[in-house]
Image 1 (cartoon, rainbow, N blue to C red):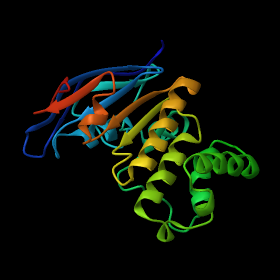
Image 2 (image 1 turned 180 degrees about the vertical axis):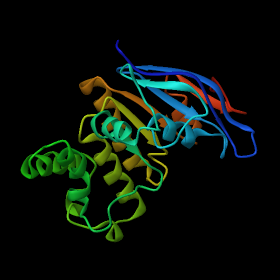
Image 3 (image 1 turned 90 degrees about the horizontal axis):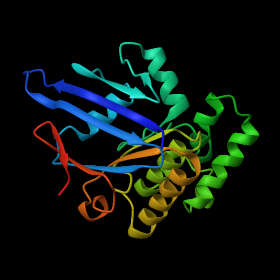
Length: 223
């Protein structure tokens, strides 16, 4: 399996100097799904932001498919996110003026897909997530769970090499959560990508291999 993500000696400190992440090492290969657990404030979301080049580390490095992610180069990071990373944010970050279908289509359009092709693929993803009837609703007209599913479809439409999912089932009922996890699993098998999922659901996390836990800035085998 080809290595998708390589992290070495990654550190991030609070303004007071306390380590939030302390010399973290992590590897993910194509087809691999990993869960990350830890207490609130342990650095889980920060780690995802560092991987996506949305924040700068104080030490160490991150490579995606062998290319160094350098947050001091915003254009490079924006390109890597657009081409190779699908990010599911806790806060969704849907564009309020666009419909669900249009929000999902955005990453494909940015990569040069025609509007017809992007909308066709977006509609297919929304159908798989049970949202066909809500395709033309704007975020303000959607429930939290519906917005979550739209955000997940948006993260998958451009077939990323790496999916970063921050509590992707946190706002979902059990049936919707299973739909989401099935879609993510299908993406791993069909698109040769890797998944790093942050969750507070310990039962779900234990189904992942590896399952890691952040404790006082250190990455440990999850329990």
